[in-house]
Length: 234
Image (cartoon, rainbow, N blue to C red; front, side, top):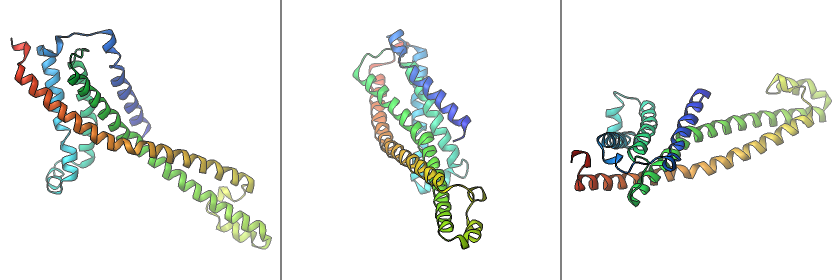
């Protein structure tokens, strides 16, 4: 993820989460049943259903072969991410900042968990993995430089040969103690990155579980609306 994508992800996630405090400042108990509320709710529901296209395509070989003839998997993933954000915005606006039932609270809560964990899996986890690979590569280079420098110091006659074999010209004249300090710093950084990765990994499973719960609650919510009628038609 480049800086521009990271900035967009941070802004969108912050904007979405900032909608939550609006429930304390404004509420309209009848907005969800109005025509505008219905349009927003229906739009959110349609987008949530379309979100299933990506996982279904990813895990179905036949469907993947068919769909990827027209749309690439990265494009589907991008749609999955951004459509989920738009659906969440529509759904929060649809509520009119008013919760009148445990079902609504559970549905919005599961939806927010899906969005946040989706952001982690889509943007932050890959970035952490990329950074970890870069740190491991740099650490391997420093260790190689340390081994060559230590060998050269132990045998002055081999100094020229060892310097020529070092992995990076810029490291040939680096003092041994400085290499040790750099190796220590990179090992600490890698340890921190691995810890962050371990923390993020369960979020993917939470994303799937929360999505299953969200779709189940969404089905109940839609069924209830159909059963009790649409107030804006009355």
